Amino acid sequence: MIFHMNWNPWVAGRLTVPKTLGKVYKVKNKNIMVDPEIDFFSYDLDSKWRTKALLIMTQNPQNNYFIPTKYPGNILYDFLKPHIWVGVKLNKNNQLALLSYDNIMPKNEKRWLYLKNYRDPIYNSELFSCTGKEHLSKGYFWKYAYPCSTCDGMGIINKYKLNWIVLSGHKSGVRREVVDDFRINCDNTGIPFYYEKAWIGNKLIRDPQLYGRPCVGKPKQIFD
Ligand SMILES: [Zn+2]
Image 1 (tube, protein in one colour):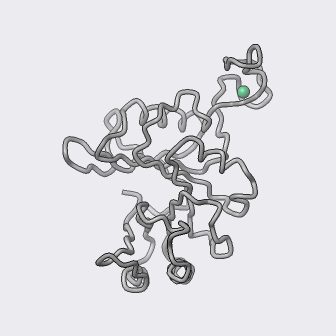
Image 2 (tube, helix red, strand yellow; image 1 turned 30 degrees about the horizontal axis):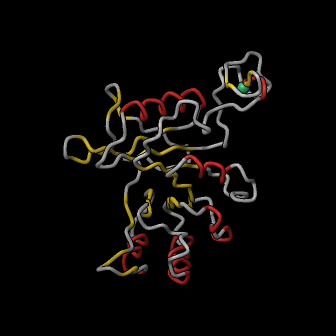
C-alpha cells in the first residue's frame, strides 16, 4: 500500500481541517492522500479552508501529501513544497490538454495523474502517442514511423513528462485491458505505474495483482 493514510476532511457533512488533518503532527514518513472525492482546488470550496489545510501540510514536511485535482489551473503554487504532490485527476481525455500548457503547471515538476474508474481505451491515447509529423500519412492517418525525430519509431512517448500514474478502480469496474494497456505503456516509457485498488467480486482489493503480482511502481522520493 503506497498511500498509508487517506485524509477525508468531511465530518458530519462539514469540511473540518484541524480536527481531521491534525493527526499528521503525530505521524512520520507517511504518504497521505487527500480524498480524491473532495476536489481540493475546486471553485466551490472555501479558500480559508484550503489555506488552513495547506498550512498544516507545509508545516509537517515529515510526510508526503498527495492532492489530486480536476482544476490544475487553480493550484496555489506558493504553497507547493517538495513534499506536496499536486496531481491532475483525469476524467476525460480532453483534460490532458491542460498538461501541455506550460503556464498551468510551471513549478510543479512532480507531474502525476490520478485516474479513477478510467474507462476509455488508451490505444493511441494522447498520453503516450507521439505526434511527430513522420507518423502521419496523407496528413491524416497515424502510422508507425521509423525514423522519427521525436520517438524511437514505435510512437510511444511520455508526452506530458509525467513522473507517475496512479490508476484506481471503482465499483462499476475498470476493464482489464485498460489496466494492462497502462501497465505496458508505462513500462515502455519508464513512467512508474501504481494500480491502487480494484473492486473484485464485491470487495475492495488494495494493490490488486496483475499477472500474479501487484503493480506498485512509485517515484523514488515517496516513502515505502
Ligand atoms: Zn514518433
